Amino acid sequence: MIRVDFVALLTDAIDTAAINGSRSSIHPTGMLQTSGIGSVSVGTNGLAPALDHLLDLKKVVSVDNADVASCGFLTTTKVEAVLAKAKDLQSQYLFSPYGTELGRSQIAGWRFEVSNNVTSNLTKGSGTDLSAVIYGNFADLLIGFFGTLEILVDCYTDFAKGMKGIRARQSIDIAVRHAESFAAMQSPIATRLTRSPLRSWS
Image (cartoon, rainbow, N blue to C red; front, side, top):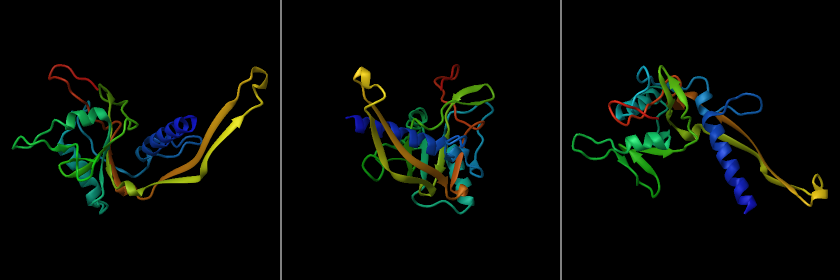
């Protein structure tokens, strides 16, 4: 049980670093912090996400000849909740929670993935707590593992108290193979989720 808990924590930390690693100190550089990735600007204060914005993201990658069949979108649950209600002119939903594979969603035929580790505290103008949307070839996001997961038990530091310490460590590094393979709406480019015409939330 302890091993499973550690693996879950480390997996979450790796996901966060791969998406938006700060590249400071010992932290790796995530996709959103990689110099040279494409960008799309929407709204002065952020906007409710729409299919047009997703198409603009796809175009940025396509014009650099980096768009491949396995490309897809990555964003937060909040953005997913808005896009899931988008319809075409025939009132058909553009978002499919089923996709071509079990458990893999699509929007208008493109792969659509969700992670709440995608940045969702961005600001633009007066807009706050805005969420990023990424499109790209995620095969070009490289995560290198150095060795295996290490779980170490310390029986001595708190020996007098009858306590043991447990530490887990996984050494990794992250790199974007081709910056042209990715585009994002991010700070100060972000998306705002609207609840009503008079009041907005993120």
